[in-house]
Length: 99
Image 1 (cartoon, rainbow, N blue to C red):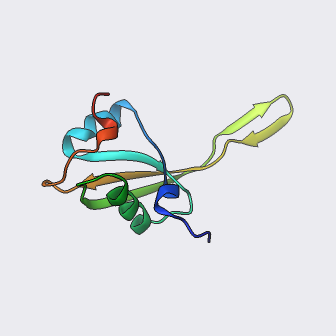
Image 2 (image 1 turned 30 degrees about the horizontal axis):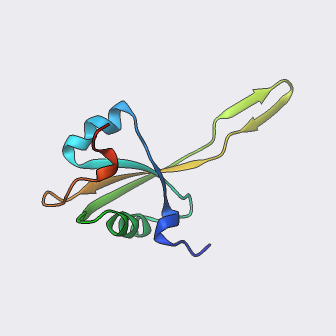
């Protein structure tokens, strides 16, 4: 397994209607490195965003979708998604404000 630094763990925020509605419950969604575990995701979020305390992290592995171009069948790349729940006394994550 590769040595992941905290800035390599979180790839980008996941912005969907469902993730926007869960922000009221202090739940934020991110695409993360497929090799990262829950502990690494928690540490990365707390280091990248000031004043944020993570209560729980839920992760899920997403297989790539089947794509076809003529006779050639392949797959898109696999992804890993993390839902980060913050504590009640935690600050909001600034990336998502104003969306």
